[in-house]
Image (cartoon, rainbow, N blue to C red; front, top):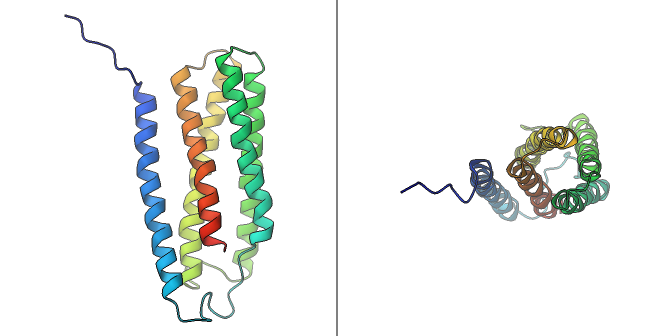
Length: 185
């Protein structure tokens, strides 16, 4: 009797396990942030002298990231139809994601120059932990999506590889509105 091939590729399974673990990490960090903020005496969060988080400016970044996810959905549809334009649409999704990361980097530099550091306050510590961890995930996901795009442009991307890259990117895209809503407001 021959062994049956696994229904789910190891790339897909590995990505799904990774995403579930990372959702747990972010859930714990956001919960700790929420408890700390809600436990602070009235008028003490954030500490005096600490900058306010730029929620309005970050709204544009959020739109860019969400748009990236929508464009990647479109790329997936094109890919499944074997459309030659799928790789260009994937590049568009990647570009919106890269713009998000670049604008977030500018935001970080402004906040650092205003004194919001990892050790300046509880807000600074949580902000850099949560938003920084998301930034690292976004940069790594951009690399993974970029590698999938290169393979796709060469006509050599495996569906499991593209699915894994998409899953990782959708995690980054869908985690951000939760972070934005909880940390910035």
